[in-house]
Image (cartoon, rainbow, N blue to C red; front, side):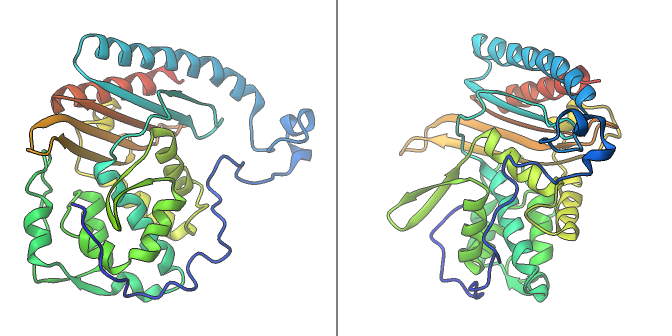
Length: 327
């Protein structure tokens, strides 16, 4: 999926005006504190915080944390998975919890989201970018999807021009690997800037990027940036979240919430092997925003195991516990 990238084609001198990445742990905005009960009580805090609901959520989230931590520990003790990490954030009260949340994993196709965000970011300066057509070389199609446990539906084909927007849609909705290499080759500079901004750590062999690492807590920041429209403008943030809501992967977070609940999410898989291609472990990650009525939240789960089915089950159990414990 990853290889040595060619020279950048699109100029990036004006990329990321201001150079400030606003998604981090800062509050979203300053409200009118005079009209807020909490604002009068806590004049130095964001007026949008509901202090009563926040205190109630704290107890519920602690209960959810214990339930999720038990699931993780029980599954590891039973040797059904090797390790797992979880990050949860209530998007109303901003309360959160983590279980092994700073441990880094191979993200697999999770990396496609910040790549897409990089293109959408530059399109705010160059609106024609998303309509630019790129041809996928045969080698990218052949090598891209052959080793996936969850192969994409309707993968893109070689020697056919596709717009950047269509390539991004296939990466996000179907997790199609074929567009990844060409998009990286075409936009190396600004895409790597986006990956760095969103906290992914490069793995290199000399000048070649061989992959990335990230944690559930770090990756959740990218989702929060989309939800708050603090990295991309509102139109582009909404566009990407809409694509994420169309993901065809249904064996993780989506399976743990009631039918009909919208989930904007991205999954990623990976296979760890030795130099002679002996499989050591598999990785399955699923991270997204669950639009629970009245209580939207971010949930990011990363797992490693010898069995994809076991990892699916763990992610579903964690999703179910996270959804049901918060009222």
